[in-house]
Image (tube, rainbow, N blue to C red; front, side, top):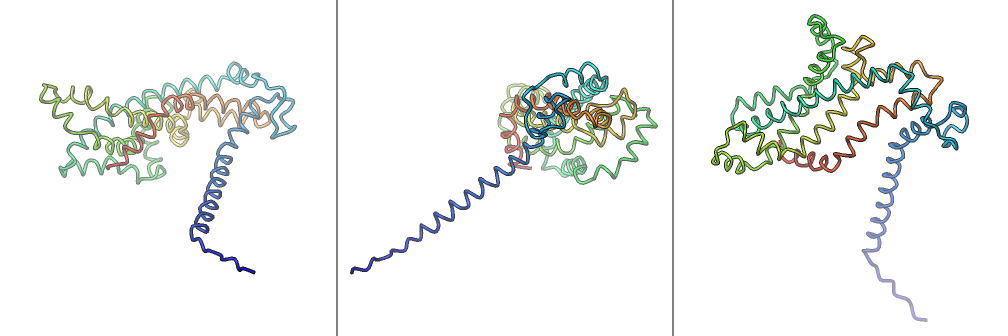
Length: 291
């Protein structure tokens, strides 16, 4: 009998290893997706359940979904209206102030980064990234209390904008360094002053990073708990995040309404993120090129 010759193919083991690694990677990604989406599923599940089904089939979606939970949260609970009003009043001005101030500051710091004074100034402004919030909680509260800014919207806006400057400035400065200087030089030759140069030439080119910061800053400020719990002590000044905690503590036996509250609080952020999603990745990657 003729003996069969077994030819060793080194690519076979390599191919099998690649297939195995790819399967492991896909399995890991699926597990991560499940972990991330599980809380959203539970929240939606309970938010649409009638009160009579809250304890039956806990992880099974109801056959009789209802909007009654949302209606009761919106129209029968004053905490939702107070929290939504204060969150809007606090978030919108804070985000706009950060966008305007950090954009202008980042442009100046990026264009004069060869000067030692501007390097020191940039280091000081971004130092806030290294200082934990717990280090200045007490001084913050005492200063705001003495200034009469506790439990006021203006006090929260000033404090939250200040806390957010470092991270915004770091990201935007890195992006501005990728904007060609030749465009500014050409505009200067055409007669643009510095004000026109920034707002007509540079600022429109910063749309990706500004949109990214718009979404991130809105997310951080809208969901802020640490600063809000320190500065917003009165009931009429509470944001939506504090109202959720208070509402949940008072509705532990009515989880369907509590989760309906959570869903309503997430809708504005989700809408903003989905509408600006195409700018976010480009803004983050471009801002990471230099810095």
